[in-house]
Image (cartoon, rainbow, N blue to C red; front, side, top):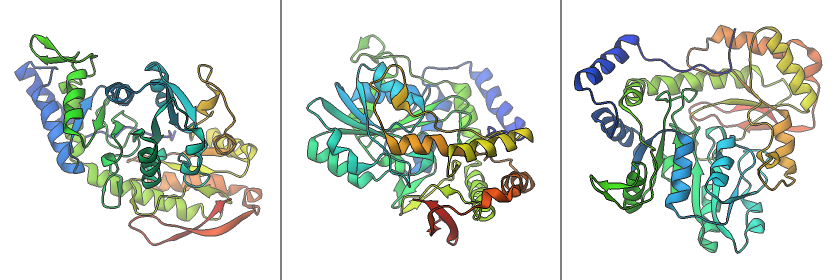
Length: 384
């Protein structure tokens, strides 16, 4: 069986050694030494100003919305994981969906201003599959209309844009360290901001609002993470270079082998050092995608319709038409991609997809160049 993803594991010896130190200290949570060490090492590796290690990526989003004191409407994307939208609703705000760019799959900045009203307080955009949004365009719109910007960068560990971490953009950026991510702490997440006072505020908020032992200075929740999760993160961080390199190799192999399949690939934002978090494939029709998915599943190879359906169809939001998103969500499929995926397994996946010559039929597309950071350009077909 080949699953869509597998978590990365350090050696058992490394992890048990780290856990043994927790047993010796008998300090499990409440800002323990491993949590502090992980935060410092992550700040150093990512070259970010401020970072808070929290329970998970969803709590990170909720803290961000609360810390910025957002109310009313928040402009967001319908093409993302459900937590992006549910966090907005959970915090008592209203998500306003803006359609996506057909090439990058990120929120389309050219459509944002039309969605702004007197009740709009922020833009919450997702860097889909780790591909940076058009952050300059979003920042310009936010400045013009006095809006806050939050980025959901759950997929972005290791991604850089114009020489700096993508986590450095926006008023607040959040990420996930869930086990399915290329860097993980089993469960976990982080919050990033360039604002020292905002960092202090959120640090207090993640610990019930305590500013010291007997004083509450903020409305808080329990968003702390523990020593066991920090131990996994510290072990995994040692391997991040190898993880990123392997994913680049697998990503490039997919592009090379599937260049003539007659499918589309995500256009990576220019100026990006990409982390190759996912390998999404855009088929010409939903029927073609479902046939490919079924062929793979018959061989016990499992992919994911990530993200389907559009979040604009959730029962607890104001539903609206987002035609580009609806089209892409119906046709996209993420292929298996993880550190221990072998080249031979990747070859099997590609051979199955290419087996039916009918799937090589011509589509109305123009030949384009896909830039893969760190590699030469790779010819592929991009659907219009």
